[in-house]
Image 1 (cartoon, rainbow, N blue to C red):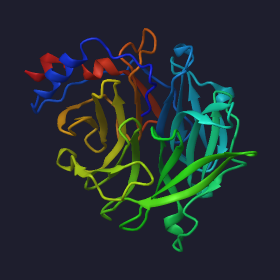
Image 2 (image 1 turned 120 degrees about the vertical axis):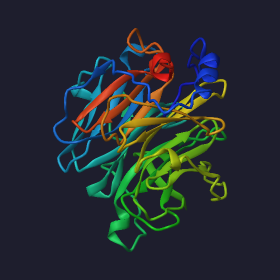
Image 3 (image 1 turned 60 degrees about the horizontal axis):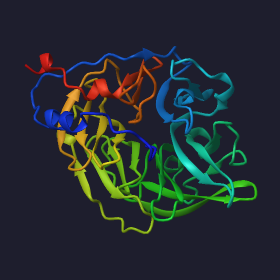
Image 4 (image 1 turned 180 degrees about the horizontal axis):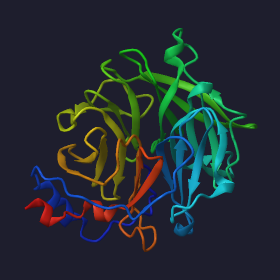
Length: 349
């Protein structure tokens, strides 16, 4: 979901965009995973990719094991568990995200991992790559809700404002009201690490299913989330923006639930939204600028909830960038993003 400013735009992206945008056939091109992780203990749900700022080969992929005896697994680029960076003993961790350059003080900053812990009704914050907690054990969310069912956090995405560099957590929940479904919190450094400050509630909800997948386009200042049975909703991410919905799109391309959202963003403003069509077992690709539907792809994953993507090259296995998606057999699948975006001409004939 997050992109480093030093990301490299793959050669031929403009040509790929032109080819993809002209494809509207009913056939779904297939792309195989480069690798598949070993199963977690319980139930994979959502991944987040952290790109090492100096040594890309040391990048990490985090993934939730969603259970009352849950964990945040850390993987290397070969899909192997990095045990000393894995967080265990969690109570149903649901969704996870990373952000770069959180200012702990005037002279110190760190990258951060943030995730929801549903059964404890809180979010957690850890530094990366040393995996130290910055939250004193967690921050309660949705505390003002009278209905206990409305206090169970589920989806989360981080937003780093290009205006002031501040970082915000946008948190969704298992169930909630028809308006103000999402809460936005500012992460503020203090002498104990971090404190959390509520800044706004926003986001409409149809009431037809639930809202889990949230993704933020940092450089453009937009937040997208899946109102699962209806559409992908788009809002401004800046907390001082009005709460007017900017768009509700894409619903007609999904069989049933709209799930995980990943934003492949390139430095020239181009890019894609890759969104899980859960019951169909495919991903729909939308243009980042226009939100126009481009095509669907079959990646071989089943019942995918969460996914994430980065566009920087990560070694010989992922020269076109890395896309990660969960599978309902308790694994995560790693793909070369370039292969997903490369149209399989035979399948389009």
